[in-house]
Image 1 (cartoon, rainbow over the protein chains, first blue to last red):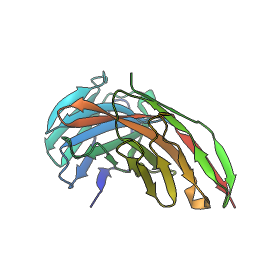
Image 2: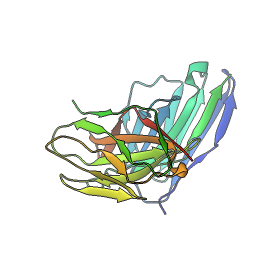
Image 3: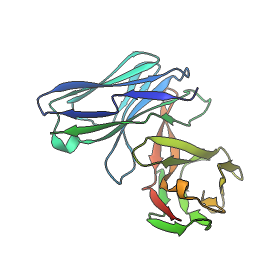
Image 4: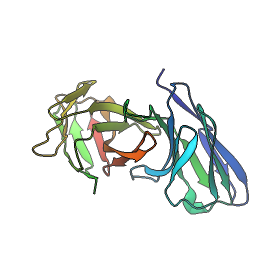
Length: 114
Length: 115
């Protein structure tokens, strides 16, 4: 099983709403990531969790709040977003350690902020 | 620093044509290299990988050879199909500590294959 599952697939939210994106993997991977992808651009790294601890925050605004409840789950809590935050949000996981740097991606959540 | 330069396209080919998408990299040491593919409306899928110099990654008829002397990892396919229409990303993993790797992507190449 090389699957990373993201929910929801699509999300429309107002600028005053609070919502959460969810990501799950059962591959035993110890590193999990959030990437943001704007149209016609490559993904850009937002956050890295390794062994359930936040290890990298790429200067992401505080209206995005990541959470890693356990080694299989990764959430991204959204609050007071702006229309320019509309994008495809991709979750990924990798094995961690020296065992392989390849990342497996979910299908993404397409977020529209209105 | 570490970076990836990728031919941007878009590339439009007829079915059964030969495909090459160029990718060169700048990196410290000898990292692994990847090609990811993104079909319309979907996430990224790992297409193929190479972990050391002269390695050839292959999958679904696509191939790429890790060339240390030219710092390149060009993607090739001998005969493309309409179903290969997608965006292709060359990617370089950079160790980011605590056992994790962040991916540096090329800008992506959109391939359209027409019947």
